Image (tube, rainbow, N blue to C red; front, top):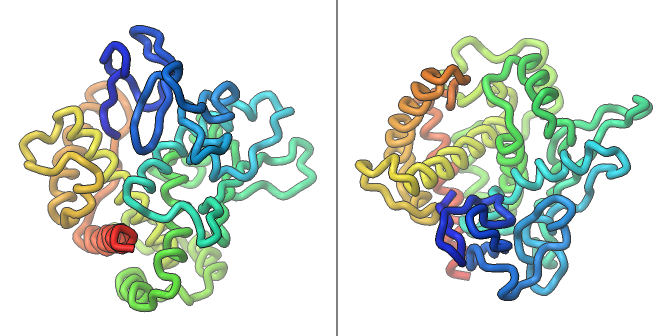
Length: 333
């Protein structure tokens, strides 16, 4: 993320703030213009009072650009679900902003917001199957239980994952959507991705079943960012995409706070994505080694428990090129 200052008193504010903690100014965020004083004009998102959304309503509507993409909210008669909804939307807004800044399409040809997010909860009486997080035809379903830290940690431990966050979930799932969108009517892009990640036409359900039954091959760290990435080319792409977003967002934040000042890198996301992944990954590794050490010094879990093997960096470079090309194409359109 970038750093922001209060439009009234110039004190530092943070991306999720609805008010300046120094002077009390009510804040309104616009993806194009940044933060402004709500009292000076602008229409807040209709969800501001319910889930503390600090964005402005989009294009004369009642919802902001981020909330527009949520087409189903959880059952709010369950008291915990309002807090869960807020936590998920708080994690989703930075993603929507990142997609917007990278000029990745957020609407289809008819002007309908995509990807769509459906936030669902399990039935309390157990009469329906458990809601599974996943993607299908532009719709991302997220089980709102993932917003509960204890439940998410239980699942992470049960599945022996090194990392499980709402941010990671959202970045992973939108990758499936953009595989479809960015390769539609572009067979050359699809063939490039298949040459890097493998043939996506293999049976997906069977591949997942095999993965859960047999696990990842023992040498998976040599070519994959995670064990789950070995399950199917779509999952390899989605996991790699999520880590490209981790890297780009993490590096822009680090640059904003002066933590990478000696790397001579551009400081804006839009320019970082134009740098080759070999260069970005070297700077990223230097940063995460330091941050891993700081976390360990304070007794926390490892900040970034992943290894960017050369083959993984090659996959990330293919994704970086895809994003940059798609953005350039929209710029020229």
